[in-house]
Amino acid sequence: MQRLLARDERELSVDRAGDRLGYLVVSFGVLTIAAYRSFAGREPTWDLLAVVIAGGLVGWAYRAAHQALDRRSTIVVGVTIAVALGVALAIAMLIAR
Image (cartoon, rainbow, N blue to C red; front, side, top):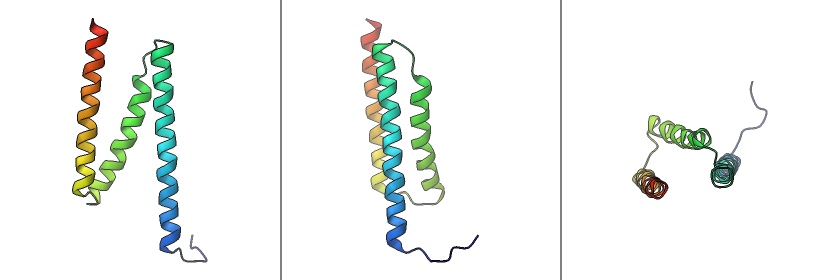
């Protein structure tokens, strides 16, 4: 289907910003629910955490497939993975006591 009006850069940037904000709200919402279930109900939340991680990996893989990754985004992904592994290790050590 063809559009009657051509889209300009402003409309595209607004769409992308809206998608980015929506993804952030959904991701942090799921993380909040996972944290609440884990701490208040002592329920496992690996399924919810896997959804958030998969969403981030899909976006990163899409950018990589289209060669749209820059050095900064690669560093951010690496630091995020390192911090997440460190926090997971610390939590696992505290629970093991």
